[in-house]
Length: 472
Ligand code: SF4
Image (cartoon, rainbow, N blue to C red; front, side, top):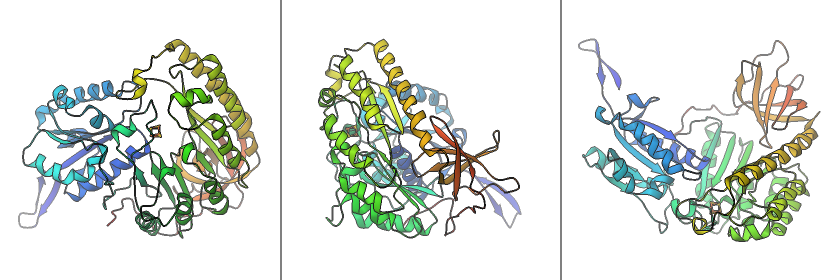
């Protein structure tokens, strides 16, 4: 709703307009998809509201990666049900929408739109049909689409750090993963279109860019001009860009020139997230990961040999069907061999429509939980020792927030570590999005603690940041 002033009557009138509320779950790709969906809706004349009670259209951007995702979605839709009498419309989008398809209409008949991420480019026509009174609109493109969701309208919620999707979909078909079925086949954007977007973002005041893809280093330039490593360097060399990250990488496509690019380009962050999933070659084979423990360790040796101290993080799954005690032990020894800076570990749970659903889930939940505990304990010990290398270092931190309870500024290092620090007495709090050197005085297993280096002046974005950005 908006208030409009009528100069003739000198009175305000309330205008009911097209309003929407969006709720987002899942990974950075989903978060960035929501930014694009918001931009598209705003271009179609909708106004975003912060509360579902005020919205005419409620969108629910779903994630299907974790256990019981569908149940959680239907549970949430059930909560929406009580609002159906208020004339609200509902849209379920994202991975669970693609996975469950029209079944959503059967279980939640008050939902009007069900659309997977490969169909978002058709949102304007879906909204037009909704406004015309249709109430069962689907956007469920299958894997055959060749189009990217390269909308020219993107509303970025953070004025300093922004995402750019460079590749959508996945062709790897790991046995446990739903992504190839929910997000379609791999479609890369041209290097020219990525670089145009990155330069515009730099002009608008963004200093930190994250290149995204479900399988980001599978990116292949459709114009054949640049390799992935060359694209990283090109984005990193744009004036005004201070940090570039990329996620998520696949070991199969991880090449040595990526490490060389990080060594040669100061703006590329000292961080590689390279999910291994298991330390056992036989489990990796069962997972259809297309590499072995030795292949993975060779890539680790390139990173360890780099001139810069590159932090390494990973995802791991414990209790995959058939994982023996000996296989699990190989995962534990891998932790020691790599010395990760962080590991995100999960118990295996079968996802609908994936090959792993048909494998006998031979490991009991009790054993999975115990393996997860052992893994997390071991990793915590490694992090405790490994983070100690930062003691006494002065590192550059990007300011993200302020913790008033502790009187600390919270920021992030180029290695993607959280740094909590204090300012010298009498100095004002540094602006969000600024960079400053921090001397590390204490290290914890999951964060670093320090003090702003004496005499340091926060470095701010060289251009004026804008809270919301519309690209065209
Ligand atoms: S590489 Fe494997 S885990 Fe990653 S998105 Fe593709 S299928 Fe899923």
